[in-house]
Image 1 (cartoon, one colour):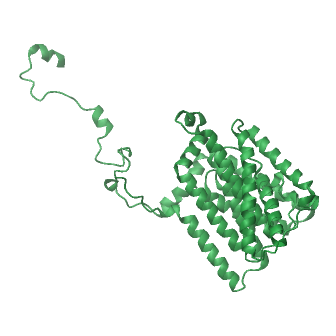
Image 2 (tube, helix red, strand yellow; image 1 turned 90 degrees about the vertical axis):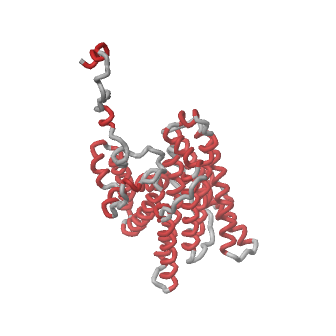
Image 3 (spheres, rainbow, N blue to C red; image 1 turned 180 degrees about the vertical axis):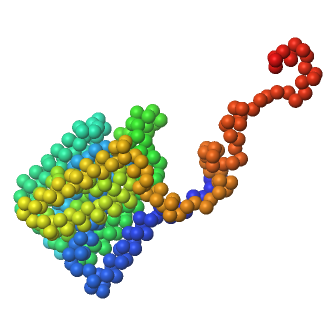
Length: 382
């Protein structure tokens, strides 16, 4: 009978932090401490986190380079904003109901776009896939720019949700993290990571590579569409110029800075970079605004060099978060208390009951009583 899974606090830290932040922001807003600019910043951080986590599923866990994530967000923003306008014109007065319906419409539309992009992903890899996704993002922007039903080059005018949009946005952040974590920790997540590590080996053991690639692209696009709907209810008008190639690179910087395959890292990096972006946009104007893109490029270069340079391996080990935590909270668990869950695969120096390998190699096998051995056999020991 399989034993029950032990409760591990590290699997719930992100939920605890996000729930605590949500409650704190609600309390601060209720007492009038948060200004409108702060509420807008929290909303921007929220959809940035959704974008980073969803792109991490594609880049970090599946191992495919996508440079068109802003295109999925663009689809969700335009379709979601268009559906919201129709619902408001039809007389629907409930803002939350309009948001839910438009979010579903925008997310499903982005999922269809993700399916379309996922099809060439079955045969393309690396730079070739990056070029295709980049082209997709530019094509989507051009289509919406030239459609009069979506406002043309001026963009589509939407109705803002209200000052409490940050609450809905953070709830959707928690939902995104919940889906992503449970997907990665499931058998499907193990199959996705197997494809990333070695696609040929994954195929050889029966992993349906086609299915999982399509699934990850569709899920990533789905949540990018939700982020677009949040943006459409936070900003008006929705203009295609926002969803440019530079914004896709900005999302990729969040993923790389937070760590490929790290959901918690994506959350922290997305929040930090969004804050930096808002501050730079506020403080810098005119020609100086170009420095913002230069900073993002330098961050990406430095992080990639730090994570991959062999000369910095010692530094990476010293600043590794797990090692720092081990130093702060040293384990008091004795080797003799090690459970049997490792099926005998624990290290030899961790379990004192195991025999040292050197002892086996140095043992002399000589009979105790050699008096009864014949002289012919005794010659063997001379």
